[in-house]
Image (cartoon, rainbow, N blue to C red; front, top):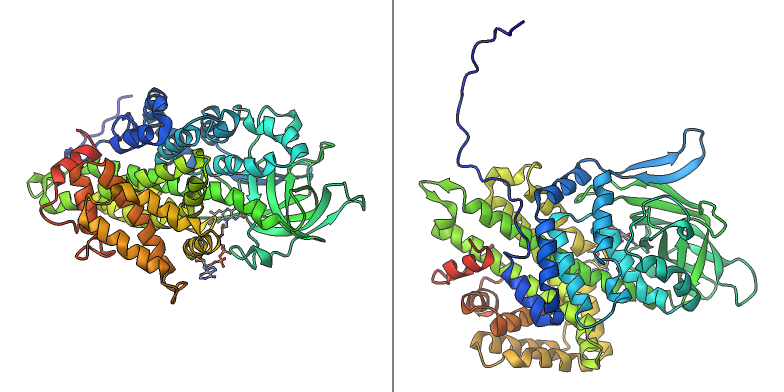
Length: 553
Ligand SMILES: Cc1cc2nc3c(=O)[nH]c(=O)nc-3n(C[C@H](O)[C@H](O)[C@H](O)COP(=O)(O)OP(=O)(O)OC[C@H]3O[C@@H](n4cnc5c(N)ncnc54)[C@H](O)[C@@H]3O)c2cc1C
């Protein structure tokens, strides 16, 4: 039977909407990233990055990211017969993203295949992945970050490093010794204290009195325990010798499920693809990492690598925000002209592009400090890691909000990419050392290592004499750093200005003049914006060249 509906009424034609931004090579259009990759010692990865950029920007990869977030993980506490499982089930797309990251070395390659530029190459790749999906990056970061701590403990290293170094992703819920590759997580934060880990109440008791025995039982809890399907975790607990770091596997060596009880999954803002959880330890088996009582320094080293990734991740999110905004503005007209051609919108877009480029160059410069072995690099790394994490992650949510606004109402709708980016933005500022904690860490670095001021000066020196605004900013920063009064209360401003000085120095040396000039005018000069909204560059800035560089047409 033929339907006898009347012909469909045509209510309107859809036009003046930007097509989805997909099948665009994330690397090929990111000149700032290409230049920084070469400059910071990983130029040999150019072709490799180009191939990854094409994959990551493809419609197929974007679909995986969408699906992994649309169908979030679920907690399976018990099996059908009532046995405890404490298992989390994920959408297949999440596993595919994890496999992609592991296959391309994001969780271990600088350790398993060390060499010049190894951390920078990984960093640049990580930034591109962050543009597309954030959830799978969480266990990837933690796995990468645990390696130095484990490497120092010979028996644990012999057992765990080969599995960590494996580039096979094996999601099966099995004892680690039966798997082709593993991921690791970390458990520091408890209900009564996250930043202040000394407030931890979890307790670890040695299994026997033999001093040589490294096995303990942990009783306690963790309030944030991301990626609970990892194969093992570094956790902090009080043992008889003080606050100590332990490796806590998901299964005990005899193949039993370890006594890690998942209480519930976190209903969090930001990515939905990765599971966050709350857990209790009911006498869980764990092995001491390093010395008893030295848990904080052990885990802080892990924290340093996580902080690098926070800066990288947010720089990647910023880059995708700028790409989305520019793409939209070049397709959408209002009041008879493309948005991208309107003077005020050009200012907003250029200002966002400058922020993104500044984040990119700073994040990759920081990554190079992880490749460099000398004392000066170590001093720079010690101070610049919290400073870069602080400033890039503080700017991220503002970039996300402004880029979203460029898309108008479409930006606010979950169908598009901007809403997901915006929800993700605050996370890197909070976890693994929230803003204030980073600023206090910068002060601690200066107080403990006098050579840090020297390392900062050496970093800035080659840029001096090229732009008077940068020169003046750096001179004032030095005075402010040497002034002891109210230093804790001033530490946000100091940290921000350290990051701005390093960004300015890099841009003045290496970016086109239009970019560095607008950066110095708006971020460093006395008449600059001082933290106001984006779109406040001087009216005579080189908008056309800034925008063409940011998103070559
Ligand atoms: C999605 C997500 C995933 C996470 N995953 C993990 C995980 O896998 N493992 C894990 O261990 N943790 C994890 N965390 C926890 C995270 O690292 C902590 O939330 C963070 O370190 C802050 O600790 P807190 O929540 O206890 O806040 P608090 O420590 O109470 O801090 C609250 C605020 O006070 C500020 N503050 C603290 N001390 C000072 C001071 N001396 N002076 C001035 N200001 C101060 C902080 O900067 C912050 O703004 C996760 C968090 C989130 C949101």
